[in-house]
Image (cartoon, rainbow, N blue to C red; front, side, top):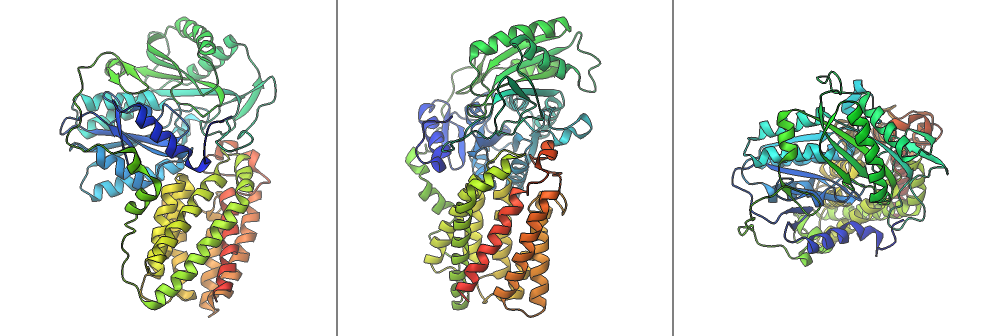
Length: 588
């Protein structure tokens, strides 16, 4: 378990602060993550990677010459927010465009996609690429739905080496696509990981058993088998990966492969070497030429006891890029000339990363748009509602985590607590400056997305922003205006996340809630009464998700496990709608 921490909510920020203090030769801190401390040639494509904390050396440890130009770092097991990614990419951009790279998880896809849109609006040519190498998470016919695990490294490495050669953005993207299409990974685990502040692991494995096909966010495996010997584990990993070759690889004999035997956190290096001796022998027997193998901790999951094997099937071009030199805090290969410091950019002191300061600056909290008296009075109700949201989430955070852990990674309660607390704090600050209801909600939206990260952060940021836009800062919101904002939020969430009713997500609650609120408002009911009716519909819809099988997100590979348990996102939304009704009654 994770033993050394202060406030669990501050763990990711404090870890990043310590990392940058220890590695100033390679990186410098910026809002949202780190960028290279060395100069990047003008016009070079910037490869910006990122994801949640808890996976070191991914992602911050892979920033440096020959690898990433920057890394956006989210909270524990949660994607960085779009604003954090935008900040890092802007700092890393050297005039040649930006390639955003990340593992294929819903939250990362949402936030990196939003960041790409913001960068494009700034005039920065941007492309995105999601690594999807985990063969256990979807079949070959649905390879685009696969998770990104330790295959991140060889795909990041190929694209970054191509960027170092001065190739234009479209060619760097094609290299990433080629490397991604030729990379496969598979893993096993003997115990789950425990997050900072938690008193139990996200999943457990029975004694003398192992989980097969695990994820790197504490998700349980897709099955269990008897605990193997080291040689048996090696054979399982190798045989499984050799069963699925890229379409343009006829067979393993005569092929070259970059090989990574990755430790997930608690397996010792000596154990990895015992396994690797058999991996190398088995691949050799199959006629595979191993090129520059890596054995060690490269993409971890806190203290998870597990290993994964990655094969990237090389051609001449990919081999050249895999062998290219790199110099980062956690990954070094070959030799590079002495680096020039980036003198064009002022160093950022660690103190400048203070959460309160950076949040205030990011939200522009020193000034708010003009608002009418009616909107400012409504803002007090909004603030009370967000306080109720934060309190109900805090009270049910453990329950939400337990529900989420049935088939997912168990961090929903943690993320919702971070997001709702940050949203209330930002709303309080904006209200104190005299902001109207719309501005209070949009400030809360940005704070929720930034601090929660992940899918829920993106979606709740969208919900609050849609409401804020509908309410504005001029008029006193009535039931019809609020209902219109919720309807807009429902449409935006479905558009952004791609989920529909029946997929076992928060959409299964948001749609009936929005529909019921709109119908009640159309009947002329006052806001509190209309909201009460809609919250009742939301509670019933959330309970109904227990009978559904998930079709999206991290729970999808474990669909049957979730039957009989409601969706965590749906349940939290229902709890929130009822809590907000209480605030509306108090401020009627």
